[in-house]
Image 1: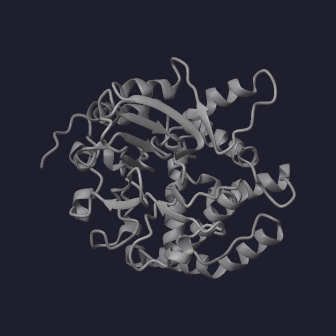
Image 2: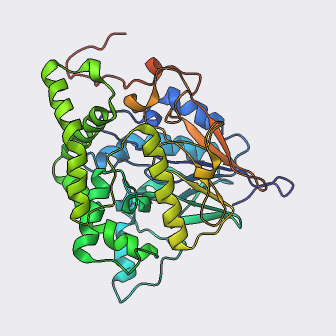
Amino acid sequence: MRRPPDRPLRTLVISDLHLGTHARTDLLRRPELRAPLLAALDGVDRVVLLGDLLELRHGPLREPLSVGRAFFAELGERLGAGGEVVIVPGNHDHHLLSGWLERRARSGPPPPLGLESEVGWRAGEPLATVARWLAPATVRAAYPGVWLRDDVYAMHGHYSARHTRIPMFERLGAGATARLAGEPPGGPVRAEDYEATLGPLYAWIHAVAQSASGSVAGSQRASSRAWRTLAGSGKSERSLRGRLQGRAMVTAFPAVIAVLNRAGIGPLQSDVSMPALSRAGLLATAQVLAGLGVSAPHVIFGHTHRAGPFPGDDLSEWSTAAGGQMTNTGCWVYDRPFVGEVPNESPYWPGTCVVLEEEGPPELRRLLGYRGRADLEPEPRATPGVKQTA
């Protein structure tokens, strides 16, 4: 990577692009919403794609690759031959690692992943395809995280699914796997421990998505509707029958959580409000960092789609056990129940990034705050044989 010797290295970090979502809520598929991000690359030497850059759970691999191609090409062209892109896969694009992980274990026990291992790829693999589209920028990949400076560590954050107390699908699957397969005494403390619990779940989800397009997306939409019911949002949109069913779900939910806890799947909690979601994600991430032994003064992560910290956030909740400061990159997905009505009012408002200079703390920036909800709503799908009108 080349840059003028008198100019310090500047890094821009984004995560959770989810290019190729079945509901078309991935904003970077649209040129007008890519423009602010590409403009923010002026003076940037390195871009870190910190996980879930592709949505590989909603259908066949070819679909998100097709959607993402234009963005990757524009990103690489904007950075140029002197720029670098670092890819750190997450849970929704864990399949990007499959070929590399298989090769590492082919001839015997693989070396430890540690906090950062260089990921290789071969022609024909999805990572090779993405790297080719990102030309002329230099591309490398790392996992489970990457050191951006001696005092700054970055990882997607999906290992937190093993520890969060929110009963999401992935958390329940991880709890069941850990219950059946067992874990080290005291819980996972190495990347390999998390991979042993979460890897089989990721592989199964990916296989389902390849064989039955949309089936995984449908289950996730059902989970989203269940969350809205339990959190008390969207009531006016439901019929009387739906409201009665929702009331029954809310009443029964604590008992269901108690059963799961007694079965050893927990610990889980029945509070799934937005503040509870945020706190649970931070606590689980801090637990992962403590177990892995990350003592960096600054940690950048994604996964939860909840950017922060913002003014008014309790900074003690954003601290690691080692006294470091956590910063979440947010996302580039329009999730209607989370964003609220006013731009930038919700910490889940999409279009955020983190800028890291050669010195100083990570800086969280909003790039889409001037756009309203109407600008971010998914574009309607084109119907074959029907002319689209404005």
